[in-house]
Length: 320
Image (cartoon, rainbow, N blue to C red; front, top):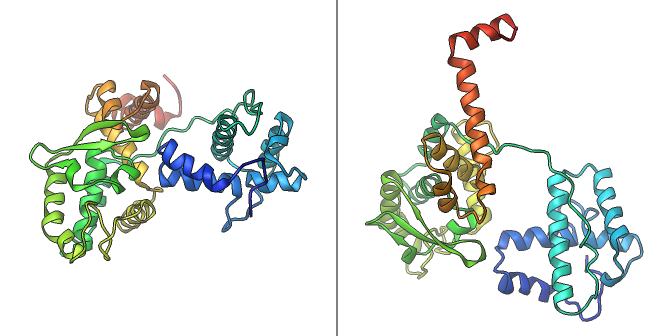
């Protein structure tokens, strides 16, 4: 499905703008492209451009606020989740910022369009027991197993985003101090830490597994595939899901789940919120504060399960 036309507009140039001008990750570029063009594997009808063509709108400069409201309503009619609608609007908003910046449109139709109010959902995280089972699942007698153990240990020890882990290079890791220099969102640099188990798993992988996977090839990428090339984000996501299933975890687990777990466990252990913010690379403390709610929810569950009077209340079915 080709995008609708606008004077001078080239979709590939917009993608280049995201990649170079906005330093967007591959994941963001895929997500925004899918939101605009539609997803070929799941049907294109939810994409913004196919919607415009269905309404006989053949140019991006003909889109107005009513068009966008109609699009939102069509997504709601298809029972698209509010979070997905918000994501699609973010993609459209980014596109129109680009179009206005390049002088291809005069007015931005999204200026007074707000995203649907989100249902507040606490992030999923793993318990300490689940983490232990999860980390012990890879078979470290093989190069792939050594690599995967290092990936899982590092995700939990550092709270790295999957994009940050995928693009990690040898020069960013200081094994002696157990510090990692990370280039995060917006090319912002920060230091993250790792504990002894992660350091040991990475040391084994770098000395043995990575050497065997690399062969005669050369790359600075820390995590590579069996062909000696840098692991892509999607493959890391599959690795995480695979080991979560093998370890008997029934929750939906992806790399961001491990990041949630990292933050939640730090706060449960008494870490300062601003320290957690710095380690996660959050620009706003508000983003980090969601994990305080997770900790409070967990505290309530522990109380209800452990306190004698709380147990009595549950058994009697009455509040006291």
